[in-house]
Image (cartoon, one colour):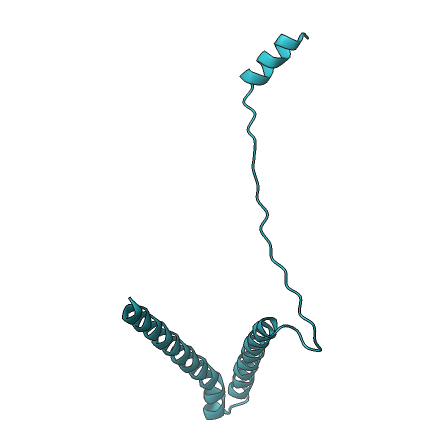
Length: 111
């Protein structure tokens, strides 16, 4: 193959080039505990896991209580955690909306 044939072949073939960009960040923190932002994320994750485990445990206990004839305690054990989780979710959503509304009001005042 001659040089001209190679060039023509390269031009005629549809070679696509792909560009990629790597974006990253790092930080260094010195101390006996992890960085406060990392610690907050860990705490939130741990709390959610524990809450889910306790809710599931209470529901299983409620089913067992129903099976042995303890109807009131069984239903309370099943629906109590569900109502608690629903109330907790609604409370936190309202808090988030209030913070969002306050931030919007502050940004409107500054403009």
